[in-house]
Length: 219
Image 1 (tube, rainbow, N blue to C red):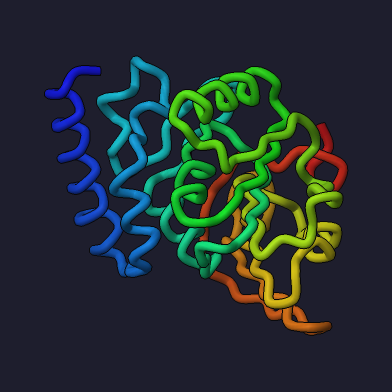
Image 2 (tube, rainbow, N blue to C red; image 1 turned 120 degrees about the vertical axis):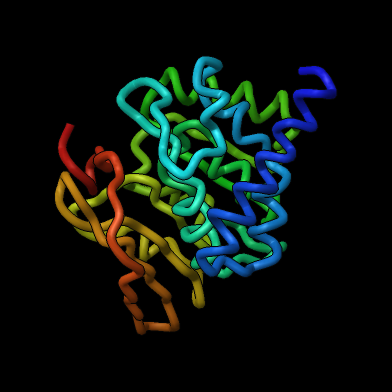
């Protein structure tokens, strides 16, 4: 990519953050900084790179999508992240959300069930230097117990219910953000674990692809 392209996409990222993200109330400086830095256009198919900074999701193949920038920002801000956090992501997808997380936290653990996406994003993370992203191929609905507990967990697909196994893998004070609902629409939901108490807060309507797996929708 030449320097002119770099400048062009940098301008588009700035416009995206200013008009789509800050204008809707996202204010966490770490989230805004990450959104300004990560080259979103690299995480979409080449034919869609000119649409990468638009206010909408985009297809990435295998019947999957890269989420609308605002949804990425909202989910990330609601995880209340710090630079020392260890975060589990269920559904690597395009890799964009993991890259945003990796700009903020100490380490990201990301699980993807579609082999083609897993292989593509693993290579992309290495190319871009995201060596604090650890990936796994498999069923993410069961979490990653051997690396738990996690300070935060993000689920990037719609679940029929909140998997207890993921709550169990949260550290004390840990946060979980997950879309919950039917196969057509969900409520973005935030869970906070404090000792033995679970706080649940609805964040608003959303629409994600189905969370497939043992603790999600059947294949």
